[in-house]
Image (cartoon, rainbow, N blue to C red; front, side, top):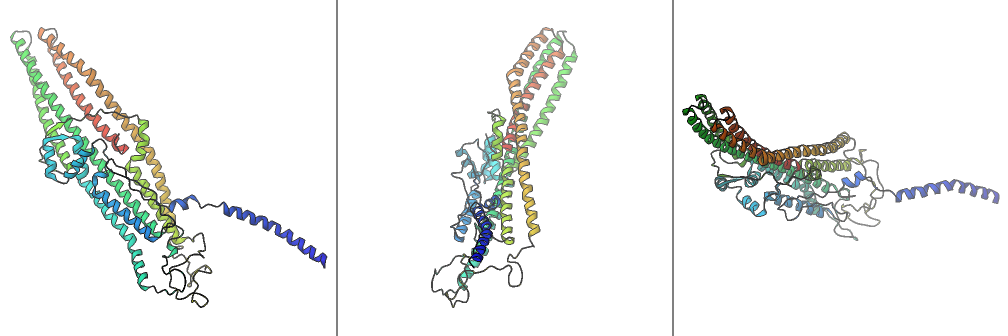
Length: 523
C-alpha cells in the first residue's frame, strides 16, 4: 500500500511540475503586460492650444482623469464650448499677422465692422498693415468661416443633450431602498469604464471638428490678407510706373526743345522731332492705360475690404518690402508647426481616432468581465432575500434573445474597417503635405531672395549707371557728337530701369507675402 501511494505521489509531482512552470510564466507575462499604444492614445483628449500674438493664454483641453465622473466630463465640455465662443467673439485674438503692434491692432478691430469708419481711414491714407488687418476682420469669406464655427459649436449641446435627458429621467424614476451602502450611486459604469467614456469621446470628436473649422477660418484669413497685400503692391507699382512715365514725358519735352533748336541751326533733321513726338504720344497713351489699370486694382482692394467700388483712396504709405529674410533652414520647422493646412489634417486625424474608439466600444468586448462594477440600477433590498445581487456574479456569451452583448457587433465591422483605412490615408496625407510644405517654403524663399537681390542690384548700381549714361548722352547730343537715336535710347533705358525697380519692389512684396502664407505666420 505504501508503495502504491509513493508511486502515485511521484506521478502527481511529475505532472504538476510543468503546470507550475507554466503558471509562473503566465504570472510574469500578466505583470509585464501593458495595453497597446493605439488603445491608450485613442482614449485621451490630446491637448490643443491656440497661439496668437494678442492672446493672453492658450486654451488647452487635456484628457479626462480616471477619477472624474460624467459631471466632470460635462463641465470640461461646457468650458471648452465657452472658450471657443470667446475666441470667435474676439476675432483679433485668432489672427495670423505678427508684424503690427497690439495697440493699432485693437484700434482697427474696434472699427472693422463699421464701413464708414473704415472708409475714413482709407480716404486719409493707404497703409498696407492697416488694410491687411481690416480685410482679415471684415472680409465676407472670413465672416462666413466664423459662422460655420458658431454653427458647429451647437454640436457640443447635442453631445450632452441625450446624457442630460437620461440623467434627469433616472433621477425622477429611480426608486432605491437599499438598507446599506451609499444612497447616491454613480452613472452607468458601462459607459464610463475603462476611460474616458463615450461622452468624453463624443466631446473629443466635436472638439477636433470645431478646431478643424478654426483652422479653415485661419486659412481664409491668411488668404484674404495675402490677396490684400498683393493688391496693395500692385497699386504701388502702378503709381510708381505712372510717376516714372510722367518724368520721362517731361524729359522728352526738354529733349524736343533741344532737337528743335538744333534743327533750326541746321545741325539735325526734322526726323528727330518727329521721333520725339511719336515717343511722347506713346507715353501719354501708356499713362491712360496705367490710370485705368489702377482703377481695376482699387476695385479689387475694395472687394477684399468689403467696401463700395466708388471708395476714394488717400495717399499711399510705402511699406518696406526688403525686411530681414531668414534662412530657409529656419523656416522648415516653423512652417510645419504653424501652417494651418497641416493643423487641419492633424485635427481630422484626431477626430477619426476618437470615432474609431467609439465604434470599437460598441463592437468589441472590454478587457475585463466587470464583476466589480456597481451599476446604477434600482435595488429594492439587499442580502439573501434580494431579488437580484448588488454586483454581477457571471457573464453571459449573449443576451436573452441570443443576440450578441454588443448591439452593433457584426454590423459596424465593415464601417469600422473602412474608417481605419481612412485614418491611415489621413496619416499618409499629413506626411505628404509636410514634405510638400518643405518644398513650397524653399521655392517661395528662392523667389523672395531672388527679388531682393535683383532689387538691390538695380537700386544701388544699375540706376546710377543709367542716370550717368543719360547725362553724358544729353551733353554729347547737344554738341553733335552722337546721333539722335543714341540720345533717345538713353532716355528709354532709364525709364525701363525705373519701371524694373518698381516691378522688382512689387515682386519682392508679393513673394514675402506668399512666403508668410506658406509658413502660416510672420517672421
